[in-house]
Image 1 (cartoon, rainbow, N blue to C red):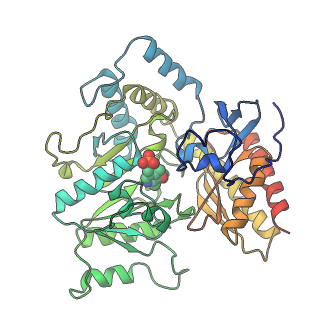
Image 2 (cartoon, rainbow, N blue to C red):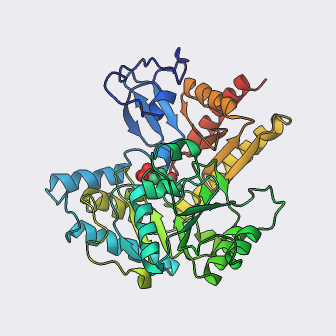
Image 3 (cartoon, rainbow, N blue to C red):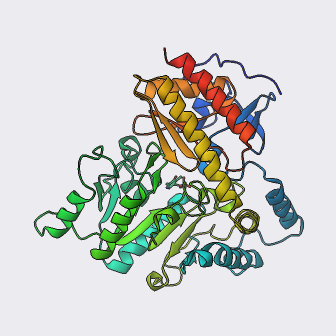
Length: 432
Ligand SMILES: *Cc1c(COP(=O)(O)O)cnc(C)c1O
């Protein structure tokens, strides 16, 4: 292992020391913050081609909850390929698909009292969101959807229409319609009771708000700045949806698969969404895979009405089933995640106290944690200094003001403490 050196380039400089700029579109983003060429990865570590090791507190934006190249999952994947098992299958019946569906039903859904049907909407998270929105509109015959401030649901037009970020919305090139944003939990710093505005608009025939087909919500807004909704807010939202016959869609793409402790991030609140979107860590190995879970009575699609070529990437089914068997047959991972989350939370609280007067805020739930700085420039510099010391952390929030900590759930306590120590050093450099 070589020690990382402070990069000589500005992280967002136009000139690119890696030599990719002449080949690849300028739409690249993560590579600008981390201008090195990565080669190998194992557990919570990634290695640049020169051998430099980085601790990964980014984890594929939550796609690598079980770490990089998890050995048990890797063996399943290698055996699967070595045995000439089906790789591409559209939605044809395969042994891998059956094994995944049965394992998911018996180990995830049934123990939680859920009887949702599983739809494979396509390989990515946005596919799961598009399918959810389409089905909600088909079931209710209504067009409009309620989304929340600072939400992120993906980059395709439907998903973008329920996403908050003005920068991302601006890329659409067409009007983004049929969605109405409402304040997320604590948007007014607790000054206004939950849902007064939404409830009033729904009751008032003169409000101009069309009856919504659905509400789409993240229990913790990952891209929006690690904003964690309170359990009672989520229960209030579920209750409001039920009273107004609005479908409740939980986008659990980033916060599901154990990120907040339980397999689903909404378990803690005790709510049952009508539709659930999963992707990111569902394959367990970073392979593309997504699910849209729908209550059985809502499953009114005609065969092929929502279709796609990559809805049967069977190697992902194989690793997904093994990940569920390995990590979700008991509550060991859940308990470990909550313990590690508490460790990070108390560490962040210590930082906030140490820099009283700098307006720092410690945020999050489970092992989705954030440290909010006064502005995006400061948070960006903390992430840059962390990178220079061998730690990958992303920033999120409307102006990138939150340093986001999303380590693999399987990270060791030692690695976790090592990463937090690097974060301390980075903050000490940036904050006077
Ligand atoms: C990442 C993400 C998406 C989009 O998933 P893609 O695979 O990038 O299309 C949607 N919703 C949430 C909450 C996400 O974190």
